[in-house]
Image (cartoon, rainbow, N blue to C red):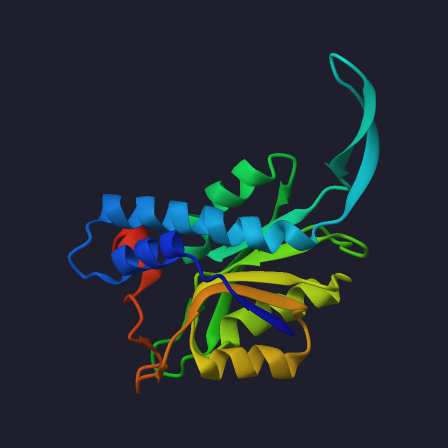
Length: 207
């Protein structure tokens, strides 16, 4: 699994805003949207393309077009914070949804929604999951995609814990991981440290 940490001053600036406990919901959403755009831009570098003929006002030439229909999969709920940036960059993408809730005692993901095409063979798939903590939810999502034939999956995360990265790497189900940073560790409650709290709660309010 290739790990791409996007090192850019604007990425760092938006990440600071997301980490700050004083950032309100509106500010958090705006920073997530901006950061998501930068991360998705890098993640889509591996998207398949094809050359097509183009007629400019002065000549005939060739251009590059996205080949096929990519599938973008936000992991609910927090993944919705990255969906708008992804579809702005790839307006022709199809969107699938995976809903997982973490059992706060066992930290095991519990599935409550799966809306995906039955056959993903040959499709370019990008998973949006802002927080990679233990890796349980992401691996569960990747297993669901693999059951439908998905390979070479790209994952976009805002924050990653080293423990989660190793769990995903060991699964062998993701080809590349794009993130803004790799944080220090997980605490006893499996939250990323220093982290930014619960991304879903900060985006949409507590459940």
